[in-house]
Length: 388
Image (cartoon, rainbow, N blue to C red; front, side, top):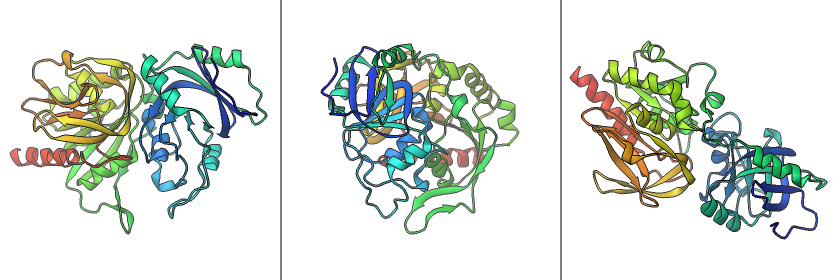
């Protein structure tokens, strides 16, 4: 059933079940199909749209004031937007922020991303929560001409994220070095000049702010593509290995990532740290399993409990798959758990500096409660050197 449409809608969001949402289109024109998710963060729409973990997804923003601070080159998490499109309650207004370099509308147009405003995002979010993340088609036509049957058919024809290896689509084409640190007043991003540890970061869709956090923790970072082998990683003689965030089905990416991680674990004692998809890759390599979630976790206010200390952290999350805690083998401990639904948010190996978390400690956007995880990684590399 369609919701009440404006007098001349210029955009249409069609769900695979036939539900239609009309609104005002902005950004690029055309049509795209994807999985629909919602994000509850009150800040960071630019970081969200450029987060490679959103490949294959259209994002519904539950916070209505989207576009109010504009966009700027410093806040991109990767070179171009990766999310397929955006859905918002209000048509973005003129930006007002001292860091703004461009309006959201023109940025989306220039970057080829479709958006729709004027949508009842509360109703849409309830539908996602109750029915699961739907497959959708989003169309923007300034003349308001839509082939509704074709849109619904396109949504139904979308195969979904299960079984899709999207890491290969968003990973870097070749290796590169990273030395930029976290943004700090008043100088912005500074370069690291005295790194203490050599880290190889595997790029399954790495966010720039994760790399900045590694650099700020004292790491000299070399980034390698998602398909890097253990031999290629160890040729850099690293002090530690980092497994990044990324999109898609972890079991599909695991076809080549899991054998690499197993070989690194079997042949070295290097500290290993994973985030998001990297967490899922590590769990699979250690013998665990992953499952597709109903609607995933996407936001910057997710409470996570550290099961070993009892501390509760407010975290940023972005994932549609999760590690099945019940599948974890002996020798692998659950370290963090979501207080929203009890799903797994962290693991570690007993007796070894190998651990990972589902949430995003780089806080881009989001709280900084979990930044200590980068410092823990650095401390583990220091300890390994001391014991050598």
